[in-house]
Image (cartoon, rainbow, N blue to C red; front, side, top):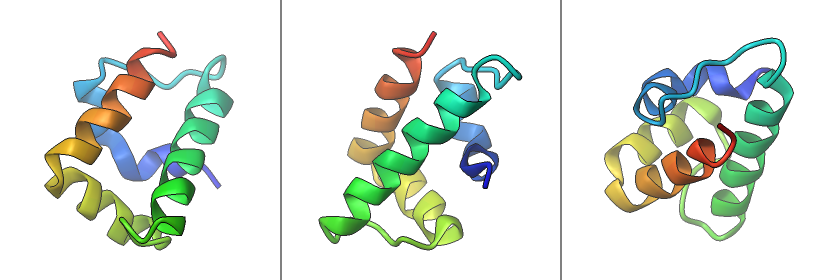
Length: 72
């Protein structure tokens, strides 16, 4: 699954453009982040819900943006 598709606005804020070259890395990073947060009970494992929860939680959104920026 291309998990990054649910996180378009977060990717924009991180100034990350998904390309064929980085698509797997972006997908893996978001997958790991959501997986970690859902295991800790901090967000849903459902991608649509997780996207909304991350967008509405400034701390989680900032964490994910920082991780995505590190890919650049």
